[in-house]
Length: 176
Image 1 (tube, rainbow, N blue to C red):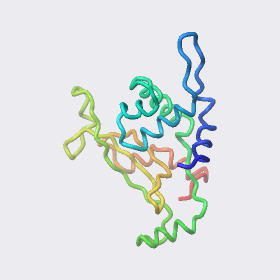
Image 2 (image 1 turned 90 degrees about the horizontal axis):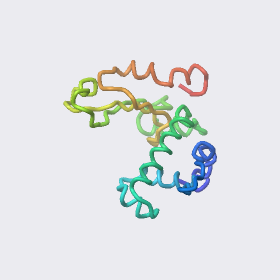
Image 3 (image 1 turned 45 degrees about the horizontal axis):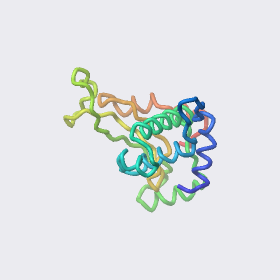
Image 4 (image 1 turned 90 degrees about the vertical axis):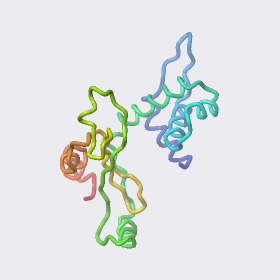
């Protein structure tokens, strides 16, 4: 991630992440919260390791990650990444063997752990509990849209119709 991208993301999230000072606790700067969260989300590093890098405990690291992820979902959850050079995307897909293509849509199953008494809707045909992640990518496999809240019993068409994508296409915010 470039510094300009980090600062742009920080600018969009800053007002929503600002915490109030108290007599007991001095809040972390919002750029630190964002850096902690991005490091954890981008790597497979443990909470202990990330906490060591920032000189904080696992509880503080966990709180920062959860707060930033919730804020990202609230503030940027329905944001669509735009393709600036559509011709480059079409050429990129053509080079991969897909002519006249500007996006790829697919889904995958993410294994989860859930309480035994509530595992039925999450039980997949592959004999494990999962939720379904639907993503749209460009020719470089960069996610431009995603929806991750469906159980295995949902069909592809149902996931698509109940995601934000049809509304984005109808409002012309997204090129089909």
